[in-house]
Length: 166
Image 1 (cartoon, rainbow, N blue to C red):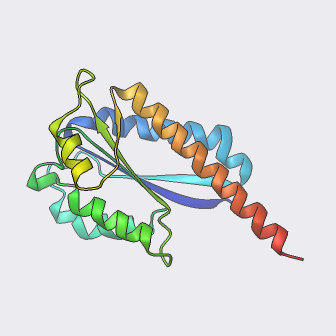
Image 2: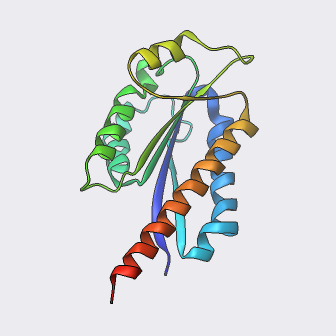
């Protein structure tokens, strides 16, 4: 039986390519690395809905159940119908709560033509660390890197637990 960890990937409306790439990367990573260690990363995302507000309760429920949260945005938190600022803050609160499974929150910022946006400066001023990426392949590489780090941490935790058991 696999241990399962949910990974929520939220993307701005115009980053549908990244959301789809998330599923591809996660599936490949499960097959190549995670499943061999008895772990399965389960993807969670918000599909092509124009207005997420009717689903906000379900979004928040899923955030509380997830192990990791990836938010990919471009030039702001999004319009009122698809704004991710409160979701991001909830994910940070979940990460700070040891009773919940959330271990890491990742904020990715799509840069246009390699230029830093005013939103990047606003995030930094608010104390939010973000990682910029230029395109879908760069997004995939960042997600792959995070998955590798998460799996390594999970392996260390499992090894420490088995060493404690006499």
